Amino acid sequence: MSNYKLTFKLKQHTPIIHFQHDQHGATLRASELKPKLDKFLIEKFKEDNVDFSDWLIKGQDKALDYKVRIKSSRQISYYLPLPTKLNSKNYPDKEINLKDYITKKLEIDFEYILPTPYFANADKFKFKKQSDEVDPEKTKPDELFFAVFTNNRINVTITSLNLTMLNGKFLYQFIQENLTEFFLIHNFGTRQNKGFGSFTVEEINEKEVDNDDLLKLLQDIFYKKSSSSYTGFNNIFQFILKEYQLLKSGINIPYGRTPFYEKSKLFEYFIKKDKRWEKRYIKQKLKKNKIELKQTHNPIDYDNAEKNYYNNYTDKQENDYKYIRALLGVAEHFEFATNNRGRIKVKITHKPQNGEDQIKRFQSPLFMKVIDGSVYIKYNDTYKQIEKKYLNLNLIVIH
Image (cartoon, rainbow, N blue to C red; front, side, top):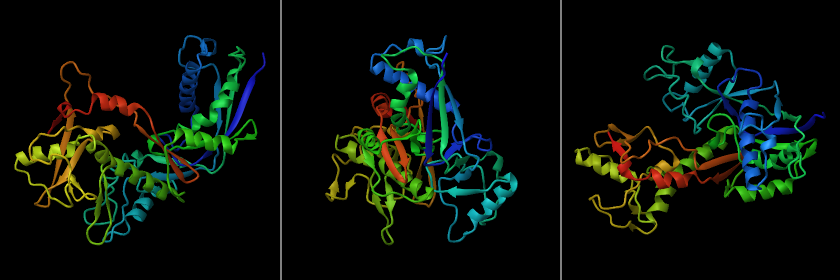
């Protein structure tokens, strides 16, 4: 029986955060690629009303009958993603000292990517009090997660001995026709929705991907593209982090001595629908407990453009409050500055009522794809499920 084979080359655009970064071939794993590709293809079959039962591995209903082999480059660069910059005016050597410490302990050469929307490394290291010297007792280099990257092309081979026909097409032919789209709407590894682990197809069976076809797919899939093409991973992920923060919570923009606060786009969208987010609801709960919060800029209720307050501004709980920021992820807690220079943490938990289900993890509605330094943004329909079920404030309990 003939062995049909499909080969293609991938270009890597951003590092992939890998729990086995120190192993050969950590750039991309078939164990992650194939299940995602199977799911994608099966959805395509269903859309086209194609009977794919003969293409499944016997005894399985989600695994198609082909194999994937990935040949990765040995020339790999390592990166340590962190959520914030470490250096400050008073302690300018934190980054270099931490790098020296980790390099000696792990015998690994790496560069930082910071800031990024990746937070899992933040609690793995500490500095001595009022110093930029690493605290060895509280630093855990073995627990750090690194990202890996290669400039070389990654060769992938798909083979199958299953020759059953599907509407006149062999399985590998169907895969070939959909590979470019598949890699545009998928990233790999950890924090993939935020742009890590981005790859695109450059060649299929030694034929370059058509640029016109690629451009059309990009226009059909993504609703926004960054206005600039960024050089360097620090700049790429700083844009992604700011874009996400602007959507979810708003950002402070430097403006002389007084920063200008640009409001959350989620807030602005829902306020036009006469729905307020949870931030003011929480503040009023704190105020009832005699906690005075610090006001650092115009109230969120104030419309800078119109120079007036939004609808029904009141100190009473009369507005239609919703847990809006849950659309883009639920934080473990919120922090608020108080008038006495302190900070108070507010933890939000879900207590199901009236037979409701416990809140589960949802795929992020936003997806960031990086291609040659440009950031493309798309959204998926998971936000509809979250909006329908979990935005009511009676689903959360404030501690």
